[in-house]
Amino acid sequence: MYGRKVLRPYLLCFFLTMESSTANILDGKALAQRIQSELQQQIQQWQGSIGRPPGLAVVMVGDNPASAAYVRNKERSCQQVGMNSFGQHLPTNTTQSELEQLIHTLNLDDRVDGILLQLPLPEHLDSVSLLYQIAPDKDVDGLHPLNLGHLVRGEAGLRSCTPAGVMRLLEAYKIDLQGKRAVVVGRSILVGKPLALMLLEANATVTIAHSRSPDLPAITRSADVLITAVGRPKLITAEMVKPQAVVVDVGINRVTDETGKSRLVGDIDFESVAATAAFITPVPGGVGPMTVAMLLQNTVSSYAQRHQSVTKHP
Ligand code: NAD
Image (cartoon, rainbow, N blue to C red; front, side):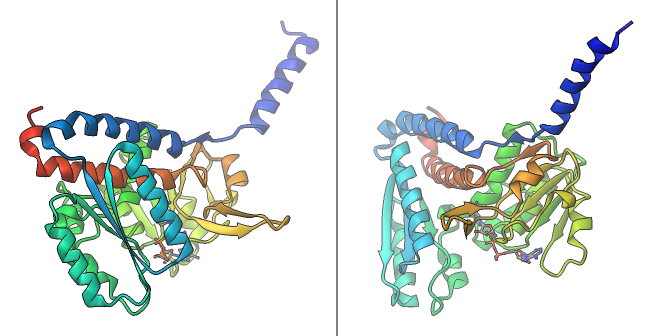
């Protein structure tokens, strides 16, 4: 019964909707702010009985500008939620044994619930050996082999902040992972490997792709949930993504645009992929703020664990 005049505007409207369809944003910044205000309330509730707030020691060696910016951000976030932050900023020529002594002191310091060793360290230092010396119950970066072992076994323990942040973001947006095909691009011990284990724990079918994987587009196109942690701008373009996939971009790359302005981008070609994905994280404002929120969360968990008489029986 519809005449042409009635149908035409309807069709136009339909095609316009199709063309302008864009992915929903996984807003890590907003979620991180919510988590941080919940942590702030929790700290206020506990610290009267415990007699002190949680404390995080951030150890940084040298003057790498990117690391300095991350450290400033972490210390600012600590203060915002009412935690103590003990900044340990050491010169580039700090020796391995001086750092070992510092970690030993922080391990024994009752005011310190979490120790973070900001990576990368200058080349003369052995970061793996230092990470192994952090007390596992203060290892808020989740990089000690005991905590990584707990993750492999699916047991409770401190989890790496960035992968934990990705999982929390997916959970907050009710992204169902059960039986879904998840592809992680990148296999670092910091992000790719622990993330793959967490996705497995959530019952996804997980593939890890890396620099030696042939035909990356064929692998990424198979993903219902695609997560990249590589560090290469525009590595993933729209043709490499399954329509309606969930896309999470962990990568952080500083690029200079045509006007000479410097800005941060991820590994995903955001504009093209946002037109085909169902959900996508922005860079900045996606995984980055979630990493900081999980660092604070881990420090509060470690504090709560240390004061169970108060935190288990408020
Ligand atoms: P990494 O250099 O240790 O690992 C990079 C991984 O990418 C490697 O496993 C490598 O095999 C893989 N890779 C390299 N080139 C590839 C290619 N062409 N195709 C497929 N795989 C390739 O880096 P990382 O520490 O895991 O960090 C990865 C990225 O994530 C970086 O951009 C880093 O800045 C960022 N990052 C962000 C956060 C955050 O909070 N958002 C936290 C940590 C790292």
